[in-house]
Length: 473
Image (cartoon, rainbow, N blue to C red; front, side, top):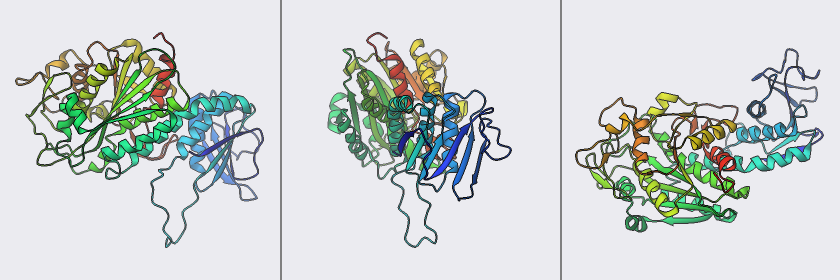
């Protein structure tokens, strides 16, 4: 991660950026700059140093500060060092500037190195950010609390960006072994263990692939003598749709169908880095949904961990099959205080909410409210969606306990998928986040470049801090 330093004075080296709002704009800013929210300006002084102004608006919130710092970073393209003047802000808000700056400055570590025969060498990457503040110690303390969530988000982005041939289920599991150095226990269940445990739905999804599936269990012990909060992540490392083949257009994006599992892993890293007192477990179902001689077919019936039989209507509705097994197994093994699953599950949630919010389905009102509050606090907003009721009828099957989706097209599939998953959690406190549409950006934005967002890692970390770090819930 980019180095962040808090200082009381402006350093002599590197570009300079000023975060300012109306009424706090110094004379050194360019003519016409007012400090309005989303306003930016960039120019060079007589010495050639780049100077940047980013507006905060009249009453800057934490989000406004994060986004202003992100805009400043985007204008500092080609600089290796940037100093952000946040002395007009209280120390806690100045620390939020570091969050926005680091999130925007991230670049995928696996990008190819520059070629020697390039006519022009690429500009240097930003390596260091200095945040100039009035209360250095106070700002640093707030940043120390926020930084783990940022690191978890960047870890998730790295995983989501990896090509599918470099992040197969087994390689994904190996990458997660790196969390052991932070105190996270990593357990990997291979095909034999999954068969013995009854993961019939997950194994059916993986049948068409030469790559074996696995389930990775990440555990953070914490200090509280209470059951863990559980995260369950969909980890389809590539999704062709199976026999119900997806269109070729934009199928390359299906390498990101494991973004839910990546977010859960990022959240576990954040909890470990900040030494959260709350015990937590993440159960990640990793598999490929491919076409092959052994691939499951529409009309197949599979049996899940809890004994439920499921008629497979559409092999491209595979994520809910993986989650069904993982949810039932998680509840049976860990009896968690609450369970939250994340998945790029349906295209219909994108139709409903676009690329702005994740869909939230929950059985517990208090848990849903805390998730919504956590999402708003960290720029990962959600929106409540319905399930159950009439949606249940669409999943009735003449040859099994239920179908994995409705046979009718143009249906509210996100609601059907959540209703399907609800069958496997019983009376547990449970929430499902459908993050399709928010796991990647179509273009550069203040809080990140185009590509993977890491959505969910900071949300889950904030949720734990809000709700699960005491013995009472």
